[in-house]
Length: 194
Image (cartoon, rainbow, N blue to C red; front, top):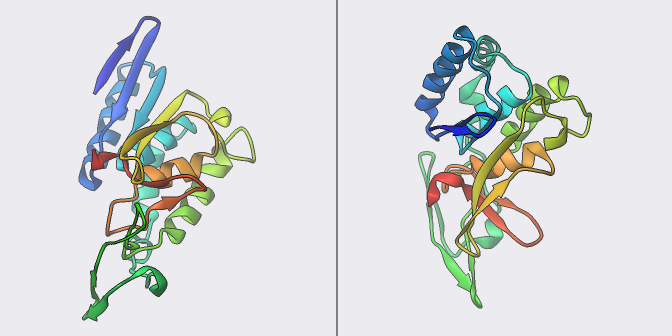
């Protein structure tokens, strides 16, 4: 989605792994045509790429990163903690999970992938291009936002300040594939859940 601000152009990138490559191509066209992006945001894969662009990565650098990543290793399944499951059955790499409730708060099954590898990748990729070693929204070259859903309240949360990697990790936490991203008060999942 492209939106025109009073003083510039904003770009909101959608989710979907395959869409990510389309987003990179679109960013290339914007750069080739000399169209500046004044603010960028996204959900899920769009948050990953929007964060890279806000850090100053060119579309060509994003393509290079995508080509260098060992995607099989990154998305390798990791066993979830057993304590939150009522039922756990593994059959040739497949897992069966049961959602349960404790009081009024739901207990969500962890995803197949705990997300630690992807968080480490984000930190190693984003940090060298950040203006600030703490890697927060204030250290970006252009304003950035991303969204996630708080599974406890069912409400959308827009990240526009604070720690960048945790915000992006929250936005791309596809239920059952990745564990939700937990904070003191929220359990975040992929922004496309809504």
